[in-house]
Length: 363
Image (cartoon, rainbow, N blue to C red; front, side, top):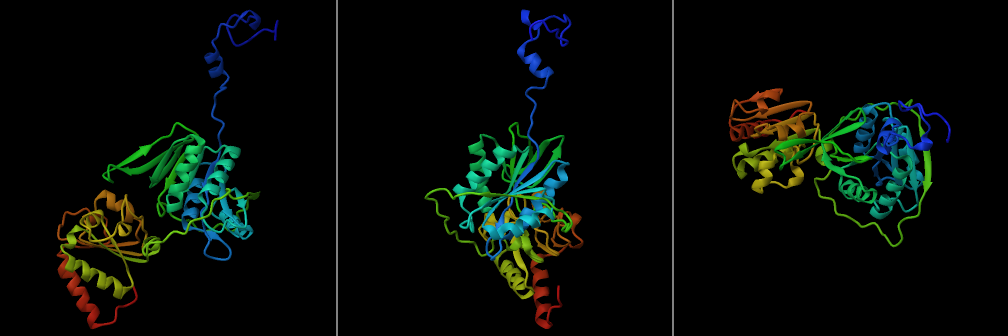
């Protein structure tokens, strides 16, 4: 006010006659442009195949990961009918503090337009520091669309997230999986989509409680959910207990067919390295690694796989790794629990003969 003495400058003079400090200096002094965003917003993806929609495993991963960042709030946004309230409460067990339940009876499947509108509306209300979605088929559509509507950047297909003093360090493969890049965003919220299976799912904390905020919403006018065909292998690898994975060292298609026969007899899932996909021998949906699936089976049998870092990023969480490779210096031998330096074709023939001789023991 006029006549009042100002204590922010050396003259101690009245501001009425003009301040010696510039507008930028005063803004910095009083922290007028400080970032006020707070909390971590997670899109909670649901499995709608049951009468009561339930959390998908990737939602549990992301909620728990956000909980590990710091002591800021973890806020979930889920879309579903009234019966999805059970999933909202389960989210608390994995670290969520608040769940926005965006409700409508028709939200029994993914609706891109409605989900985009609901997600961005909640984000504008809570002003989170970070906003994280699964890099599922749906999340890869929803994330960029929401980012564009809010005018912020997004880092896609991350395999690693770390928080440092409020700054989210987002790691993802680049240059065709040959390098790992760590990206920092200068917009808020800091947005990322994360590949399913990138983080461990912790044990449920049954005692955790939180707040459910019911948010009724009408679907976007004229928008009808589209049916999408699921590939036969989709989602299987991430849940597999036993995986037989082949690399270029498999040698030929005959050996590949032997591996598939053994997998069928053992009840194992087939996987492969990128080089096998590039040869056209297996579909990309079977690929494990930075640019493929992230798996954590009980047993991972690696046949003719060199063990490059790009491949290790997708399977190093396996409980037991068994490697067969004729190169004794192959990197896969360094991380394997059981390592055999030998020809893959010979190993497959001996294993198949053993299976012919006796019923296989439970793996």
